[in-house]
Length: 187
Ligand code: HEC
Image (cartoon, rainbow, N blue to C red; front, side):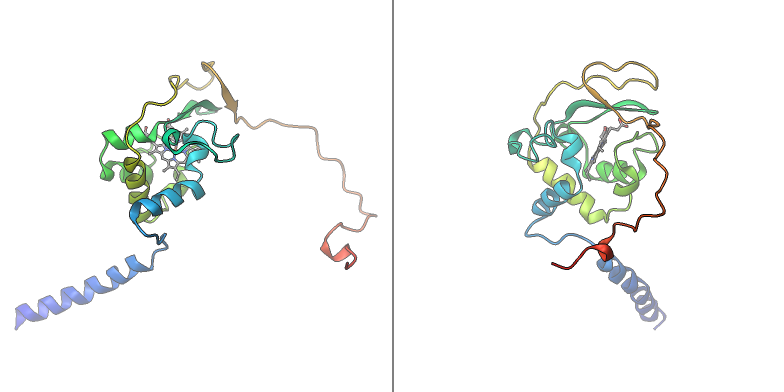
């Protein structure tokens, strides 16, 4: 009797947790890999981890995708590179990938990798990005320079993400009506 009540109580406790897990937003697709493929496009992963993705507006041969981007990202954190995720997925476990993505690599991860966003991804979605990346197979991509320390000159090509101050904004002309939709004449 005591035992069966215990089981019922345990089930009653587990059920809301299971339902809550189902409630979490996640991508539905025909397979985990298809979900991962989609997530990595709309999650902008290619923009930083696939060489030439932005310039080619995403038209990069699948065989070359996610093999790393040799253009560095320079900022107050130094200069870092969008790594070859296919080599990483081939070497590391799915659980480790989840840990890196949710803990900003144990707090060691540098910007502009959007750690603050990937930490909020539903675990299933993160796992699907791993499964997709792994399904592409390992491939050596372009050679990436070593990270440069803050203030140090990086090797090769890089973009500078340091905030700079431009000219002050011109003063607002308060005599003019604001150019909003309400001032537009209907066609
Ligand atoms: C704005 C550029 C940018 C975007 C977008 C981006 N990354 Fe990154 N990512 C980086 C950089 C740069 C690093 C290296 C950070 C460092 O060295 O600390 C990195 C690191 C990583 C790592 C850790 C690699 C390692 O060394 O273990 C993983 C995994 C990763 N990214 C996956 C992703 C996934 C998946 C997405 C999409 C959801 C994504 N990234 C989106 C730039 C980006």
